[in-house]
Image (cartoon, rainbow, N blue to C red; front, side):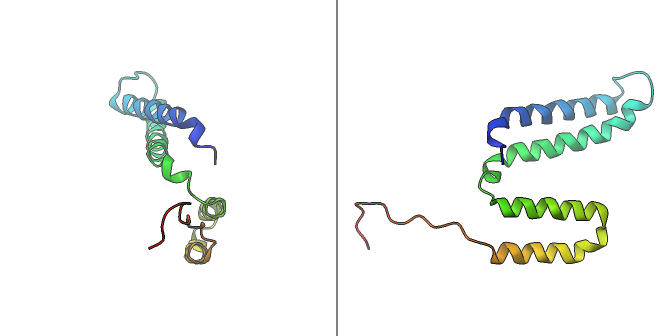
Amino acid sequence: FGVGRNTHRVGGLAAKHGAHGVRAMSGLIVGKAAPFRIAPGCLRIGMIMAILWFAQPQLQNLPGWLVATTVVILLVAARWPRLLVIAIPIAAILWLLGPRAPRPGPKAGTPRA
């Protein structure tokens, strides 16, 4: 997944975009109307990056097929929103019926109960 190596970068991007969005919305950038058009996008990117930064330990444990399915569903949602009615239940079924991670067995030298 590659998130673990870039934890500090993700946090920095979240702070940078969030601060720029707040600065543009507050009117500290004087000039054309462009900052007011950019500000909502910066705030959204900052919030998403902050969510990814906070969820980074859990994201490392996600199986690859679940990440791929989520990306496909997001692309389907962007292109054909009505297909979400079909895509979300299919993703839920795949998640429920998907392969499970092996459970760790007893450690060597531990007595069995």
